[in-house]
Image (cartoon, rainbow, N blue to C red; front, side, top):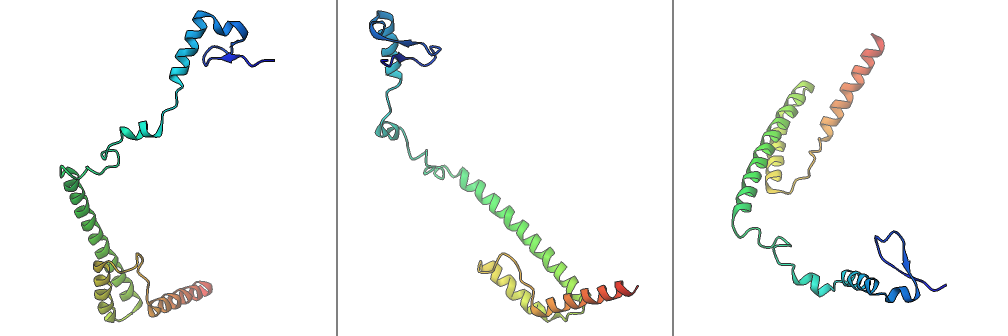
Length: 146
């Protein structure tokens, strides 16, 4: 069996032998071949400009202005969250009876954060961890006997 030529969208109909050379069929295959020509890499890249890669986004200044506003908003939110965290930490330390000698640690911690060197998570000191564990053990013993 010789393989017949078929067109997409023709319902699977194939043209064999002399039927391929009929006038209307030849034109169908010519149109289909023109559509199917593969685009070359050079042709594709010819129409790509620096705008495609976003290289000219900052030229008009609109984007820089918007990014500046967003950065300021994020800085304010971060500052508020940091203050809330420090207040919560102070309350927890006061509740456990830890002395306020950690205020120096808080100042160093804030300096590290502002300089961009600090870790993303504040790690509690050994004293704080030991006091929290002791407090939990006491609560567990009290709950067991009551």
